[in-house]
Length: 79
Length: 418
Image (cartoon, rainbow over all chains, first blue to last red; front, top):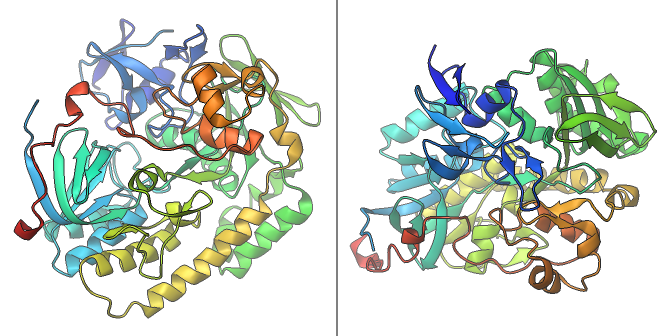
């Protein structure tokens, strides 16, 4: 099975899984930290709310729900 | 400034859900050159969202037909601005078109309540989308709550995926809920009711989530009847609102939040059509019929439209009935406390917003609706809670790299060339 790194942890994923689903499957619910310092995670699952923003392969502020996992991808969430 | 490869087409369709795909197919069948743009990684829109990247069979069939007609389906791209007639800037390209068909779909209505911004609180459709995208929910405790026809299929879907589902908790009463069941049956969708026969009895009417509890993430939900349920996820939304941003950017006339169209799905702006949820929340069959009309008309034919127009009219009636049935009660609109987050992007609380006389004041004083989502989540919520009307839409309608602004400026559309 292909793997990606989420906060340094290798995580297996099924082909077609989005980064948002993979992060939650890894037990992480804190995707980004809000302006006032609160933990936040996805709510809309469809690219509207921007609550699931994470860093993917060093590009910050990407919506985790809009990207498919790829082998060797490096993802950083805040939690 | 980067100079992009320019795409020229007769018909540009924004959205690859049921309505957009039907529009593209109808236009392509008339011989039009068609381009479809959708920001998702796969076609199907939300209701037929691909499971693990694989579209539903009916969607894949249409997509294959489109490819055979030479239609380009551009996925993972978003229209960010429509700077001049016949010109679209996307996150990745410039497109010159003769006719534009907006099939931008809808999103969930999220209303503020205490704890609503805790990780683990999601939309009903939102959680379903994540599960279809690979989220594992077997044995997870999930509360399904809110309002609208979506809760039933979502609760059914989550249970089928192995989750322990509580609810659906629906804020409307028994009478209205029975009316909903009757309407579905009268619409000839008895099959739907049979499909959901296990979930339907679990409906708890006149019940809603009073608050979500937790510190860094959701751990339980307190219902309006005082009952507390420990859970991993809360799947909660209060119906659907149209994605009308592009139509508003173009200045299309609206009726409430919905885009006004004639029987040919033409908006008030020349050569701009609108189909599916933005013209009235009515489901995929309405979207498909509207798409078929718009595609044909946009490609220059008005032949044999009568049966399609008739179908749209009946679905519209159904849609209006649904909207009345699932009216949001005042108690739900009054759930937010002073420290409840309403604008998630800028962390603006209900307490700060309630002091503002208008949306414009609220924006100037608090920055509500001015973050990355551009008010897509808090805008409809503030409209419901404070009665504030929609504000203007400004390009770019989604966050993009600075280099995209004016990216197509040197490429004026040449309509004679098309």
